[in-house]
Amino acid sequence: MSRRGPLVWCALIAPIWLALVLCAHWEPILRDTWGHFLWHLHVALTPTSLWQFAYESYMHNNPRIGQTLTWLIVTPGPWHAIITPIVELALFAQLTALALGRWPRVRSTSDAFVFAAIFALVVATARQIGPMLFYQPFTGNYLFGHAISLAVVLPYRFYLAAPRARAWWWIAIMLVTGALAGLSNEHTAPTCAAACSLIALLCWRRDRRVPAWMIAGIVGVIAGGILLYVAPGQNIRYNAIATQEGMVGRIVARGLTGDLSIVLTVAVYTWMMLFAAAFGVVAWALAGKPPIGPALRCAAALVAAAVGISITLIASPKIGQRLYFASSCLVATAVAALLLPMLADRRARIVGWLGAAVTIACVLVQCVRVYAVVGPEGAQRVDAISRAPEQSVVTVAPYSKPKSRWFLGEDFGVDSERLNIAMAYKLQGIVLAGASLLEPDDAMR
Image 1 (cartoon, rainbow, N blue to C red):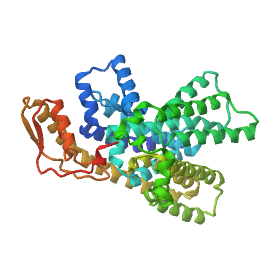
Image 2 (image 1 turned 135 degrees about the vertical axis):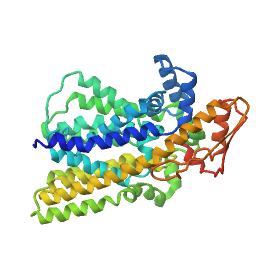
Image 3 (image 1 turned 120 degrees about the vertical axis):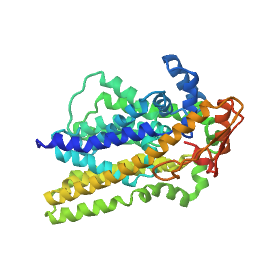
């Protein structure tokens, strides 16, 4: 432990939090966010409207719990800028805890390094990192969903590292949290249930007993996953694409090459993390090869979980970069878990800190640069549309920032998007100056 620990943590967290708040505040109303935004224009947030939206989503739209969470953070006000950065910092704290086998300590600079390494690796390599952090439909459905899944897995991880008794009410907590994790995402629920089951089996081999809360968590994830898979909304969303072919049919139709391509995409997205791992190996060898057995086992388990999530995707009717975010986070956590014991030499640790700091700074600066521009542009667009007289035609300027890993890009290049917004505001039409068509899939979650 170090007295410098709190200062190091503050120097690490403060700029990250500030950049996350600013970019979330600037995030424009875009693509699927319009649906939530328009709903809130006509319906106030109350317990009744919350239940109505959750029920309608489950029955007729996106049945994931993330759809309702997205609706909540789009509520008029500063909620996205307040809540989302907190959840994102909590997610990276969870990943740090996953690597350490315990919650990170404020007085530990080593724990801060693991947090910094994971954050740097994720933001440097994850595809669509800007939208994953700030675009509410991606954030609510995938980032929040991943945090819920980790909330289930972490008690198992902690118990495996250091068993301790838990009160009886943990059974109810794990049952509910597990169900929410199962309802979060179709492609992460099976791996979450498998990881919890494997840890429970390891605990049985070690202790000859499995705590009741572990069983409750597994049951909750399975039950939530079943509720998600059989939700009536699955037969409607994406123009009922899920009903056009069964899971086995999709797997067979893609063929061995197509299925392998889906599974191995996680390696394509995270291969740059090998540079960090290679640096760790060199530092480890120069330091005399200190023991890294526990860290190696942890890293192997995390990589296996990342691959498990990718395997689940072969049954998905739609494949997108956003679906690999959870896998990228787990691979980054695996690398960071290895770096901690490998960088035993003080000079190597300093180099590691510098690499993480520079990476984080570059990514945050780029995010701020992009969203400081598209935020005001989006606000001007909403203002022009909302103030236009009924039955008029509104011309809006396109976003000056193109589609990139930082920003989803122009949404009004899709005719149907402009038409839907125009109808909602009783306009005759919306014209995008210099419109260019987007791929239809870009407008979908």
